[in-house]
Image (cartoon, rainbow, N blue to C red; front, side, top):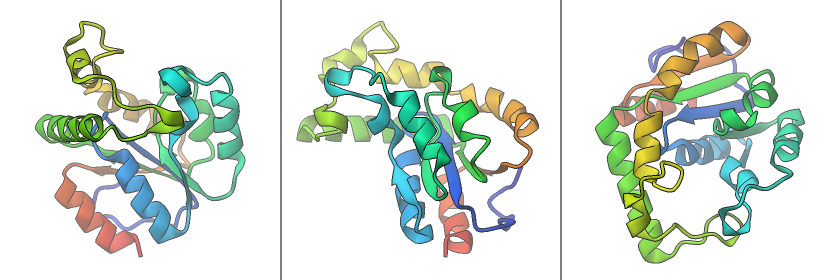
Length: 187
């Protein structure tokens, strides 16, 4: 596994950005896509249909994306079957492994801003009402979901390293480290 200080072995053409909800996967994927001239596909836009319903063609769309030569996307929905489609084709995974308080603060700011501004997200959806953050259901409560999944990548990455040896993995532990890595690698 590479750190923020290690140079990339090659300029990748297919990139996954991993991390817990609120880490900044989409923002980093968008930035890298622009710098490396990669098509950024926001995987949430493939998954969520109108009314927050899962799109039946989600895995077909992920399969089509994986078959392309140049792309960057967020590494999400592993439980829905994305890993066997994306990981064998990816050349680089960037793991945003930030402290809990960083990702919690980012998630709160993002969720409140989107809700207050009624920002249109994927397929016309907007953030659910803020009172739903108090729900008992982790699928409905973004804060509970984040808490439930905080350690997911820490548990998953050793298995991913073993299963996909072609995949270079860069682990970035703070936003400052990410910025330093971007300056060194994202030209």
